[in-house]
Length: 395
Image 1 (cartoon, rainbow, N blue to C red):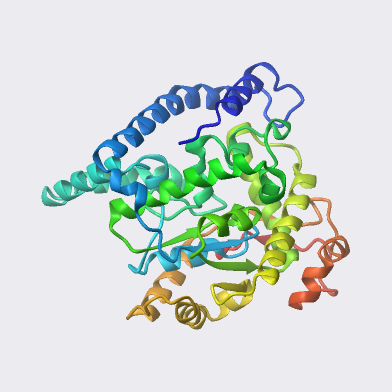
Image 2: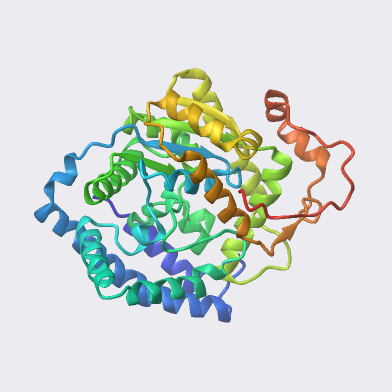
C-alpha cells in the first residue's frame, strides 16, 4: 500500500509558512479550514489505514477478488459523466463508490460494520437514517454548482486522497508547483509512481466489490482521461466510455467549477484564475484519450457525445449494455426516467460566461479546432456577445 508522505508534508509547509502570493493565502477562511482539516484528516487517515491492515488479517480474500468488466466513464470535466454515472448506479447490476464509501468507509471492515448498524437501525425504526439524511441535506446538500451527497456515487479520483497522490488534492492545496503533473499522468509520471498509484486504486475497488458482493463496477473518472494507458494495463478487461462535449460549453463550465470548488477551501477571488492550467488540462483530456482509443480500436470502447447521451439516454444505455456484455436490466425505462427527474430537480445558482473569463468564441473554436472538426460541434457564429448560461444540471 502506498502513501505520498513527502507531498503531504510539502503541502502542510506551504499552507502555513509559504502561502503568500499563492491562490491560498492565510486569510481567515483559510486558517479555519486548515485548523479543521489538520484536526480531522490525519486522525481519520490513521484510522482508515488501521482498518486496511485489519482487512488484510480478517478478509485476505479481498486481495485476489476479481474486478470483472469494470466500466470507466472518462472525458473532460463537465461533460455529462455525473448524469450517466448516477443513472447507471440506479441499476442494481452495478455498484459505485459513494462519498460515504470514499471518505468514511473505504475498508472492508468499515463497510461491513456500517452495514450491520444499518440493518439494526432499520429494525429499530430508521431514526439514525433520518438523522444522517437531514445532516447530509444541511451540509453537502448546500454545495451549489454540483449535486453532492454522502449517499450518491462520486468521482473515483477522490479515493486516491487516501494515498495523498491525486490531482484532487490540488483543490484543497492549490500549490501547483509542488505537485506531480497528474494532468498528464501517462506521459509525465515515472512508471514506478504510476504503478503504485494504480495498484492502490485497484485495491480499493477489490475491497469495495468484496464487501458489497456486487459483480460489476462503474466509475465516474474524468481525471482518468490522463491515465487511460495505465488504466488499460491494470484493468485489461475494462470497458471505457469516453464522453465528449462541445468545448464552448465544456471549457467555461470547467473554469467555473474548478474556481468555485477551490474557493470553497481558499476563499473567493476577484476574478477567474487557473486559466492556463485549465486550458492545458482540457486540451490534453480531449486529445490523449482519443489518440489512445483511435490506436486501440475495440468493442470494449465507446466514444459518446454529450448531446447523444442527454437526447436519448435509454437507447444509448441499451446499446452499450449489449456492446459491453452487461445484462439488460428490466425496468430500464423507469430507471432512466427517475434519474432524469432527480437530475432536473437540482437547481444550480451558478452562472457564467466565457467572455467574463477572458475568452472569445473565436479563441475557443481555434484552440479546439480538431475537436470541432471531428465531432461537427456547433461553432455558434451568430451567438450574442455577453451570452451567459447557468451551470447545467446534466454536467
